[in-house]
Length: 305
Image 1: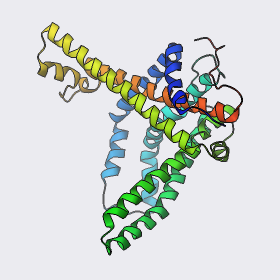
Image 2: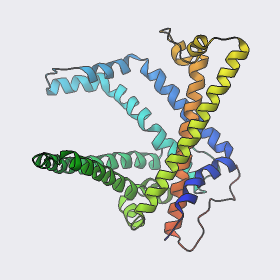
Image 3: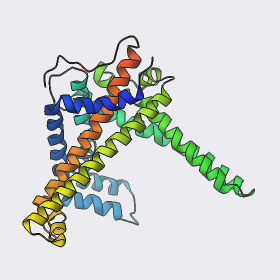
């Protein structure tokens, strides 16, 4: 039951190198979801949701809840779908390809996707339930420590403890989504059994994934900015004109769908795709290693790109 955190953190990059076609499809899917969210934000429905968030002094009653449901339920449903779509539709597609279950990206709204949706809600509820009692305990600890002049020390300790508790829950539950796609069963307990004794290796893997992906994204952003600056200089644009091209502020649709903003949306989709592939690749590697400790965890090489 051992695996290399370094190798696990690099598996996603190996997949991107070896399988560029599905990676490109996932990037286009994430770009489409981004554009759909942008369009939705322009609709009156989205405006109603924003008004509700900013509303104060609402007199709640069954009639108020009923009226809100009638007027906002469609908008809330669309917003909820767009919020979870990348996790519940794109991520299962990535897992299926990396596990060798499909030849290429397949997007659908099936049982796997619905189970994935409930899984993320369950983990969110689990983290919230764990945060409430620990927050109360840590809060009283800080108040008690203040009487002895140790408030800052206890505050630092409780902050670290809160972070480690959050990481512990996330790491122990990290295989649940992958297990769901692999076995078609929603089983968080299976993830906890599989990750027993592997917390620190998973933590190191997550840290390395964050570092590698962050470096790649920063390098890509820096390179794109350098290329854009050179092109602006060659074409005779000033820095102000170049800035207005990339980030227009005219108060119209060009602010969202102009050439400059679209370039950044494509880059954002590419960055998110890299992050997803790196995270999913590391999970698949560790999952295979922990399930089959005597076999070398590799991706299926018999699937054509």
